[in-house]
Image 1: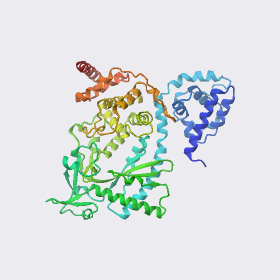
Image 2: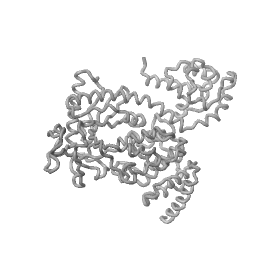
Image 3: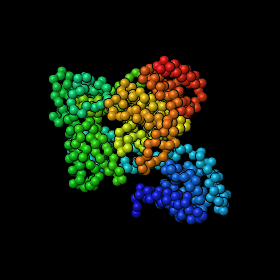
Image 4: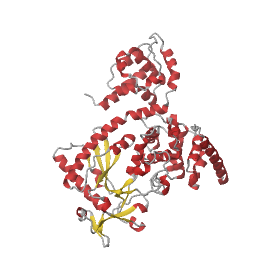
Length: 557
């Protein structure tokens, strides 16, 4: 029996060929071939999504409509697939009263106007969403293999725990369709609240190996073991500990040593699991463990694709809160108390060989999870731009470019800067709220971290921000050109992009931080003609900001 993925692939190829045949074949032969294919489809998924698929893949709309009309009129075996919850009948009236003697042209013309109502944005999103269940299956298969190895690590050295609560990691992996990497925390068996935290200085932060990039030095710290500390004896051995001459502590837990020990344990666990046939040949590759970095990458096969799990040892302190700048306690756009809830407890992960640092990964994903419970198209906008980024904004065949983490941060800022539910009612308008913030960040070469605004996520990144800006601006100007999936490299046409006077405006936040506000981004939305807010106060603030911005641009020129 064919694998489901392979069956889907052949099904798409067959129907694609049939569509091409319909456009070239006169009379009854083309519709007859379509009927033979759709009457007993091997996979309901493709049939239920065929309209979106073929519009996105560039097939002729008339041929697609012909397929829809014909299967409704002449294929009773497939009628059970069209349940009331099916998305497409809302765009098409009941055609059961039509007669088969109507010509193909009359059928196509009757539905052509209604097909225009089907948004390209929604079709593109529909295909992305159809993949999420499959990605979750891949994640679960690979996760089972990883947990087998981590359980053996724990059996060899109980100081490294197995965290079975992977809901947030699975949630983020399903959201991100363009990347197959997952950050996995390996908790250490100790009470982080019993450790002494000593902040690192600028001099210390540059010492050691594998220094983390673009993290504030103030985030770096030592984690010391108190001289009178009880229950920490297991963490004073040479394999993870370094003694120190201090009145308060006997020494420090060294993250570089912890990483080295965990790397050795993982290799030993993989060897044991293979000997005991707990994992199969080809399930897992430890080749990248040789790399010197602050995380341990394991390549795990899900049966169809390879998922990279980046293992990071973590020390948890439950009685502390993540250190935030004062401006981050403005909770516009989020349910009340969200920021305080997600920042309860602190995770420390390796920053350099000698230093730990605060981790913001879990609070960020928890905020995304909260946004998933809110009405509107926030997460849909993230899904769609992530796919466009993968298809069109990255360099061909390379991973260089914007990452999913960058787009996550843009969404968090958009949620705060556009707090009204009205901002997120329409998919197109929601996407442009992310686009204006992304364009501004690229133009000013500064994407501030949502929880730590003093941290620039573009700093020291190997990114061509000027080229990226032009790609994103091209998409914002003519999105319909990009809302297709590409099976072959897409040619980059030198289309003349609309200026609309936004390039000078986008530079203003770099010179005056007061422009990083809702009114300024409302001005940018109006430039793209997607501003439909009726709130009088916001309209007035936007008008005032526009006058102020025009004056500032005029003074600079």
